[in-house]
Length: 130
Image (tube, rainbow, N blue to C red):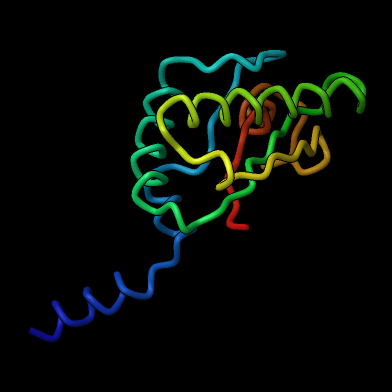
């Protein structure tokens, strides 16, 4: 059918980043924390399966923070968050060379605002295609 062909074509055009987004491309963190909670681990378990099946793909693991704290502190916290995600994925069998880690601290917010709703979206690790 025409619809089936369109669906197959759309799936073939889907990029690696699209596929990772479908799995989940961001991990959220509690305030002042780089600890992975149970929901983060569930998401990373799914990401790990995707990454092990697509070892030819490389990603940047970006650590982010909300605006509270000094720039230096937030850069270090973003780095700890990225490292926590990296370490967990590698412990599940992902290939370390698939990743580059970077911390943006508070410099690239996902949401604007000075409230918990915005801050909770900014305390994250995101994956972008390298």
